[in-house]
Image (cartoon, rainbow, N blue to C red; front, side, top):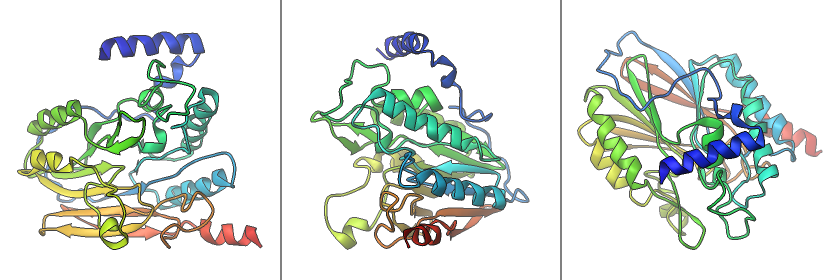
Length: 313
């Protein structure tokens, strides 16, 4: 079934003249492979984590995103990781409009002067809502448009003794909504993949919907986490899961579980739909500095809030 799906997409791409967009965004090569342990001592590095960008052509969103790109480039980290919801919004379908949003993000991201490793978010799922004119038979349905632009929705890469794993935290429900869930094929891949990673190697997981988050405990409402995150934790329990990077909530959160695993919910670039703060969290991104097998983080205000308020006068 999966092979047939890919074959159908290739035919569609040829007809639409879009086959060249299947290449990765930048010249990096995330793989499904692993690496033996490399001592991270004297392997210091920085990276940036930008989540919930929600790029759109209106509300001055391209200007705000460009300010974040410029700030990152000035800081000059080794690479960028995104936390999902790159665009707003393709869940309601409409191919031309949806494709233009991914094109906008892809074009703007070329301005980064370092590799970018992307994560899929719920707003990046093409045509999943009931009102979408496209359905499950469309080659770009659900993960398809994402895969055409960025490749696999879950993958891994290594950097200076640390191992990074990006997961796909989204599944579509029978009533055509989304839920936080790691599907079976992905968990099977993770279980197989992690066997090739030395148990001492520091691991960073990136996921759009959080694996662990206190938002609901503080604010009430339905859980906004991955419902079967415990299955991923079980697979990783004998490894050095150092850090979880997550998005979706549009607020800033840091925690440490049992003196082992840190988790960061990384605020957002877009705030409340590019109209201001959400949950009173200023627009921004995370800067993470790694030294040996430890790290420290800082939430970076890239200047958009002040510029947005200036323009509103």
